[in-house]
Image (cartoon, rainbow, N blue to C red; front, top):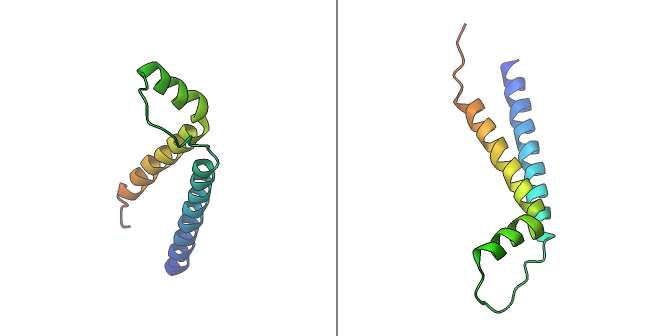
Length: 82
């Protein structure tokens, strides 16, 4: 019975990782990165671009980082053998 639970747990984790990867790649690939000449960019411009143009990507990255913290906490949790 434990083997079935372990396989189900691994399958669920792999599926969740795959879904997060698809969402992350979709958000990164959907943004027009504006490749061009390099010129001076002030701090104001960087803040405006980050939060207005790339806001969706930042939200997805924030969700990914949050889920990584939760996953790390879950994995480091010690279980009592009874």
